[in-house]
Image (cartoon, protein in one colour):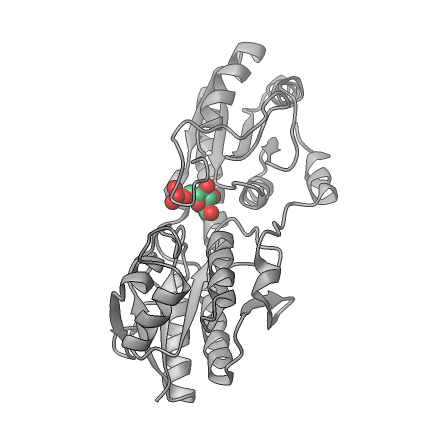
Length: 343
Ligand code: F6P
């Protein structure tokens, strides 16, 4: 009987468990597969740390946030125990025929390298940031937008009571999808995203015009936003496991600047990991389940080096290489459409 290993790698994301369940149910019901899960991302693959995944283990997990397998930003080539040849031996020892890797850009890049080293593998895209070009949407994004939208709604009521300007920071390292969706949904007065620098003067002009008509200004900013003089996104927390600067804190930078330049009392809130935790939306559960079923079909057909993706309403597959290093940013037209009614 064919036996496959599943791993979740990188930042967690609502909907991961729906993917795992989709793979296992499709695989055991339709294809007569067996599955194991590698624990804590590539760490479990490198060290052969697995858990059996049968139907009873995935029962009722679609509605759970996080990942039952655990995740990490551990790279398959970072330690001497890793690398293609070592991992082949682990797979042979555990009698695992191929790997399904669920992750974002960093995971797909590592998976592509493993593929080039001869490891049979398929990918499933994941990120709340929705910034992978090879797919129209990633699961987790919809849930994050709902959470961020509710946060803006809540901040607006307290901002209105105190006549304050409120600045909400949401995630979005290279792309401002969460910011633009949540900001538009909740009627923010300015939305600041990594793709489009805006000057402090412009931001303050929007804030002031809101105050001048008796309203409390609401600014949504993505963590990767840069003021024109900034070379890099604001980071003061060192680097992550993939050696990328850990972002977060731009709202705390902006709020005092806005207050100083406008005279309007301003408060900042960083939403942080609340966007990644908790119950996935129905939309993310459905997309995750469909991705999982499609990944099971791919391994059943022995089609290696592909990633499942959403195109319109169809689940398709694309070469893993196409998924690597191509960021789906918010198009300028899209941003300008929202920007036309800022202030
Ligand atoms: O890629 C998803 C994401 O949530 C980014 O928006 C954020 O910069 C990053 O992960 C934070 O990840 P970590 O879990 O390493 O702090």
